[in-house]
Length: 309
Ligand SMILES: Nc1ncnc2c1ncn2[C@@H]1O[C@H](COP(=O)(O)OP(=O)(O)OP(=O)(O)O)[C@@H](O)[C@H]1O
Ligand SMILES: [Mg+2]
Image (cartoon, rainbow, N blue to C red; front, side, top):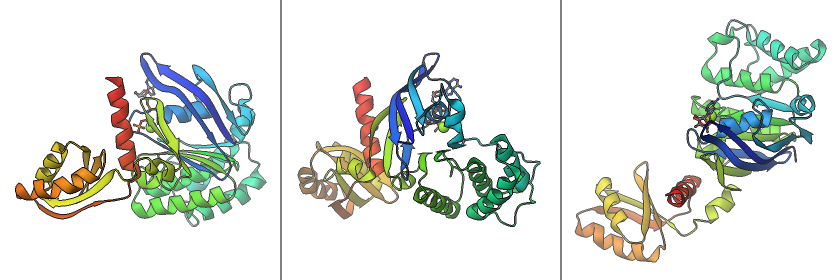
C-alpha cells in the first residue's frame, strides 16, 4: 500500500474534524474522498501530508511513518491543496523551478522534468507567462505540474477541478488516468459525483467519519431495485404526492426527473400512476433505474442523521 492511514483523529476545540478515518490506497489506484462542505476532507489531506499532527492514529506514505520519517514520506508525496497559491508575479517556468528547488530537484533534472511536465499538462508555450495571468484551469494544471516535479508515487488532490470548466475538468482526468497507469496512487477530494464514479474506490465522509467505502459498483449495488425514475408535470406536486406514498423514503430532483428512493418498488409502481393521475398530474415515465452514487450518498447521510437524533 502506498497510502496507509489508520484510525486518524483530529479535533479543533469541540469540532471533531476527522473522527476515526482509516483508508488504504495502492499503486495505480484512485480513491475519491467525497463529502459535503466541512465534512473533514481537507483536514484528512493535511493529516496525510503531516501538515497537522494527528491526535490519534498513524499515517504511512510508501511505508514511511509521516511523524517519525517525514522527509522520506514527503519525498514520495505530491500535494495540490484546495487553495493552492502560485506566485502570481513569477512566470510559469519560474514557479515550476521554485517548487523543484524546494523539493531538492537538481537543475539538470529540473530542466528536463520541467519541460516534460509542462508538455504533460498542456502548458508548453506558456513558460514565460506570468502565473497571475493564467486562466483558472491553467493555474490548476500548473499546480499539478508543481506537485509532480519531484516524481512522487503518491498524489493528493484537494478539489482540483473546483471552479474549472467542464472541458478542462475532462483534461484533468485524462492526466490523472495517465498517472495511474504509471503506478501512482491518487486521492482526490471532490464534491462531484461524476468524478467520484471515475475512481476505483470511493469513501463518503460526513462529520469526520467515513460512512462507507467501496468501488462505485459496490456502493450503488446496495440500492439496487430501490430507485424509481419519475418524469411528471407539475413536478413539485408530483414530488409531494410521491412522498406521501408509504414506501417512498425520499424524492430528489435531477434536472426534469425525480429519483424516488423506495423501500420496495412494487407498491409505488402499482399505486403512484393512479394517485398522480387522480390529482391531475401527468406522468410521462415511472420505472426502476440503476441507482447512482448521489442516490447512495443521500441515503447514507439520512441514515447517519437518523442515527444521531
Ligand atoms: N485550522 C482549523 N481550525 C479550526 N477549525 C477548523 C480548522 N480547519 C478545519 N476546521 C473545521 O473542521 C471541520 C472540517 O473542515 P475541512 O476543511 O476539513 O472540511 P472539508 O470537507 O474540506 O470542507 P470543504 O468541502 O468546504 O472544503 C469544519 O468544521 C471546519 O470548520
Ligand atoms: Mg476542503
